Amino acid sequence: MPDAVEARSPQRHATPAAMAAIAARDLAPNQAPPLAGRNLYDADRALQEALDRAGAGWAQGELRRLGELAGEPAIIELGFLANRHAPQLLSHDRYGNRLDIVDFHPAYHQLMALGCEFGLHSSPWAEPRVGSHAARAGAVLLFGQIESGTQCPLTMTYAATALLTRHASALPALRETWLPRIHVRSYDRRFAPIEGKRGATIGMGMTEKQGGSDVRGNLSIAEPVARSGSGEPYRITGHKWFMSAPMSDAFLVLAQAEGGLSLFFVPRFLPDGTVNAIHYQRLKDKLGNRSNASSEVEFHDALGWLIGEEGRGVSNIVEMLTYCRLDCAVSSAGLMRSAVAMAVHHAEHRNCAGRALIGETLMQQVLADLTLDVEAAVALSFRLARSFDRARDPRAAAWRRLMTPVTKYWVTKIAAPLMAEAMECLGGNGYVEEWPLALLYREAPVNAIWEGSGNVMALDVLRVLQREPGVVELVTDELRAATAGDAALSAAFDRLLAVLYEPRLLDARARQLVEDLAKLAGAAILRSQGNMAVADAFIATRILGRARSTYGQGLESFDLKALLERATPNRPG
Ligand SMILES: Cc1cc2nc3c(=O)[nH]c(=O)nc-3n(C[C@H](O)[C@H](O)[C@H](O)COP(=O)(O)OP(=O)(O)OC[C@H]3O[C@@H](n4cnc5c(N)ncnc54)[C@H](O)[C@@H]3O)c2cc1C
Image (cartoon, rainbow, N blue to C red; front, side, top):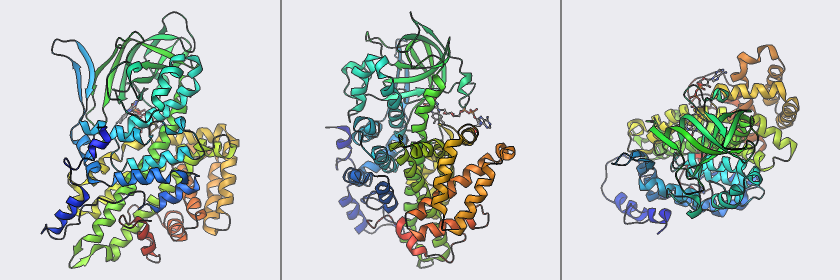
């Protein structure tokens, strides 16, 4: 039985019918029923609209199927299990021979199988069509509501495949052996040479002890086995301080060659079937993302094949990171969506002093306010995904270049505080590990840290402003057009423009600029969607409103019912 199917087996986990039977019995008073047995896609109007706008409406059937699964108690339970039973490193066998393998709970493998079944690791490359990156982003948003640790290897494979595809002509094994196995929608957990496997995943190793943001300072060394050049094998010696998903079949690794920092394709097994010299030292004990193994690793003359030219490592890895950054934003939007749905669900079923929390003015203010950030996060993330789908169009390419760091910065950064407020809506239950919000909360900060932390994103935006004026012009033209006709947004756009062209102050104001740009773009997208209840409230509180540091303010004159309707988890859209 395939892993993902086995996971749905009613013998092992409560089915919706079993849940209903439990609910019919005399249970603890005034507790919300489990939030399960619903279709996460059908309940998410913001997602459906975003996909339509991104030209990915064709993916509806598959996403509805994933939405259905993501709401099943058995699948939800997998996320808990994979995180409760963290992976273990088996560095040696009992004789002292090196093993360098990681043992995962079966739930991890079942989730990986599910992710691959829905193409999260490669669908836009395997089945390219208009809207395929956005459609995959829809699957990422839904999948992340089950579990996020497994998203890491799926994302890295998706991102690495962009590069591997481009460089496949220099390395026949990529074209003939690796890409066909990445493209298939199957997960093969076995630690075995690639030739005998029916699926493959790829990881990446950049971060070293002395620095992750500044990869130019990498100390690992690469020396050609015989000849230097693209597609040639090199011997790599050095370490990586973070290398996640160590059971991936190969890694993209940065190391210093004679021509400078370069990127290498480093498989776990060599073409002769022996194990490559990749030695795991430890697994990190992390705050969240616990289902995913993140290793410390050493390379002892490990063989790696040069991707592109020597000295082009940074530009190659940046291309890969751009895809990862999209996923960070989409996945954070999914976490936020999930947290707010749980908060609304709880408020609908919990009474205080005999009255449903959802009817209380202050609770409505808080929930509606949270909803606005989810709406903007979804709108920005899918607008970004759309630009990945149309990268040949100069306007889309410009949006992708400037708005990737902007979107990654803002969406991932608002996730953690939003999660804390949503948790508070559940009262003490929210803080208890048995409840799903604790898992989401511990997951939230990592998307802001990895793949370029906040300051690094802000500096990337400054780099675009200083070096790529054409990109800035195309994006600002688009924002000017989108904000025209709305006095508040036009004025905000003019203020932003004044900062953009004030180079003396830009360094110190980079974060302010990025946040303003994200909120303005988010507001403009919400407004262009025509959902004025959401757009007006977002503009009033995030652009015009007075500065504040907590949720639940400034919405007294808005139609909260309309806002909450979109966040309500149980009503299909
Ligand atoms: C769970 C997890 C899994 C990971 N998996 C992987 C993996 O698979 N592969 C991999 O290669 N890496 C991985 N990483 C590493 C991650 O990408 C790095 O931690 C991240 O890039 C930051 O690098 P650093 O930790 O060295 O921090 P630093 O680079 O030292 O940064 C520290 C702080 O300084 C800020 N900063 C940096 N430069 C500047 C500057 N010029 N001006 C102002 N501020 C600055 C940063 O924004 C950050 O806030 C993982 C990390 C985590 C937490």
